[in-house]
Length: 270
Image (cartoon, helix red, strand yellow):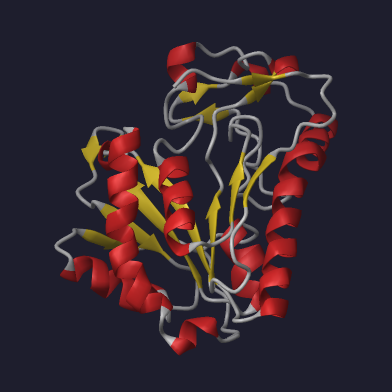
């Protein structure tokens, strides 16, 4: 996928892709790393097209899975329309990796000398609107009822630093297992090799799950799919259909639509 460019001077650009759905659907889908779009002012951040088509720029296949799930559940969905190389929507506002200087062993030239003022500018222009859209949609869904469960869609590389990753799908969760535990069981029963907080840990202070979901007492998790399973549009649609089969009975559980507050823990994921 070639990187997209939107006009630098176009003040109407919305950094958030919004998919309308029923506020009473009981589930909100998110995609924090949906796009490899870069603003014209940043060019390609000094990277070649090959790098911008890789995982360092966006989660390959994740946007297609998210859109299909939203359609299948008639649910709202929110997706980023900017590359995580610009700013990572799944990091806390003060996280030192909010703007990456190095990703997967590759220096990002356009970020190498980024200043605090520039990080703040990117945060206000891109990061904050996405987080605000999540908060506003959640509040609207709570007001309409039932309390929504939150599903954030990601993808991971089949190999990390020469080490193969055997999982087909990983369920990442923070400190509330009521959604994750039955979904892991359902996916395993469907014949999938499932990672429980693999290949990343689902707890990261200030990330989308922590800040917008767990702290509100909502049931939420990340679904990480191995990228070779969703790399094409056709594969992403088929994978979303398969995920939906496992998600439906879990989302029918009353406990995933209740508010529940649990003690914090810390971890790391991408």
